[in-house]
Every structure is written in C-alpha cells, then in structure tokens.
Picture 1 (tube, chains in turn yellow, orange):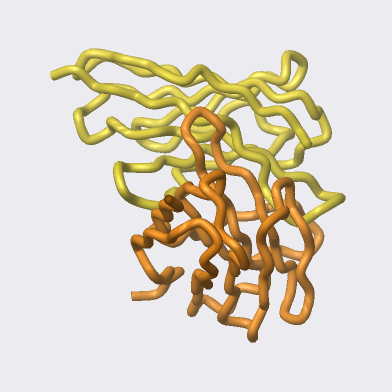
Picture 2: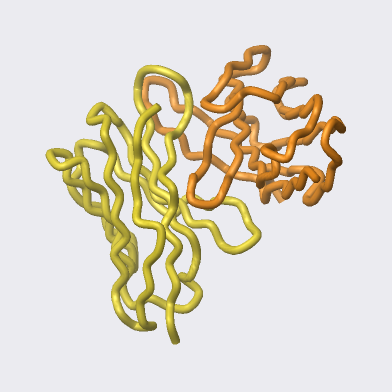
Length: 112
Length: 116
C-alpha cells in the first residue's frame, strides 16, 4: 500500500505553535486530510486540502502542502491543552480502491 | 444523534472463540469500512464495502469476514480469535462524491478487543 509517514511524538508548551509533519510517497493523491483522535474516541476530521492547493487556513489551523516534496503539515496556533491528542494524516485517490491511507499518527502533548 | 454506532465497546475473548462486531450508520452513506488500530502502526484497513451488496479485502483481511447486511449495517466477524487480533477496531462510513476522490469519513467510537 501507499506509505504515509509521521513522527510518533511531539511536545509543545501551551500557547506555542505546533507543527505536525507528514510525508507520503504517491504523488497521485487527490485529497489529503488531517484527523484528530482524542483518548478513547474515534477519529474526527479536522480539515482537508485538495491536491492542487498549497495552503488552507481554518481558524487556528493552517495546512501546508508541498507536492514537489510530497510533504504535508498541520500548524496549530496558540496550542491549548485540549489539543492534546493523536493526529493522523491521510490521503485518497481518484482511481483505485475506495479508501483512505493513514499515517502512523503523531501524539501531541501540550505542556501547561 | 446522527453518526456511526459500534457495539460492543469492550470485549475480552479466549483464543479460538468467535464474535461479531456490529456497526450501523444513519447518514445514508454508501461506503463503509473496518479498520484496526495498533500502537505505532496507525490505522490499517481490514475490509470495506463501497456500496450495498459489495465487499472487498483491505490491507489485513486474514482471520476476518464481513457482511454488508443492508445500506446501514456492516458487521465484522472473527471466526477463531487469536491474540494477534487484540486491537482497537473502528468502523467508518463515507459519502463518496461522484467524480472526486473526497472521502470525508465519519468514525465510530471503537471496540477495544482483547484476546487472551
């Protein structure tokens, strides 16, 4: 399957910005997504970006896509303790099987 | 509340026992999925159903079977549970927009399965 890679852990201080990174191998992906998983819960869609876009901003969230380097990032401004969770990037394709390919997830810990 | 409902939330099985994980969605989505989540490995697709009446294998189908009972329900069966199947299982559904590859999944809250 497609390889989607993320760092496993990230710690930041409350109020700082968090940047969670993701790299993928298949450049034909059409949409890329960020999901958030809080403890004991399912995954919640945070945001997504179409592959012909470079950037998408939604309140405290900024998604950057570098197609040349196959690199996706999620920046969370003014990180709060409630942002502590596991963040997954994922990609989908216009052809092939109907499913998402997920990264390994990054556990974000916000230190008060 | 609209969404994806999974039952049970927790289960302990002995090796060799069988069980069925239930999933139902009330959003009229065509596509449904079963994933397992293991530490450090992200989510891996077990089986999916692109539409009512069809099912296909995902990345890790061995030891599992599925049934798309109707548009709402998609069950996952373990015929003879093994300790390697200890995991958290998530069901998801999606309304696939024709002509695009947008898959905004809605996830259930998961089933935590332990096989001893």
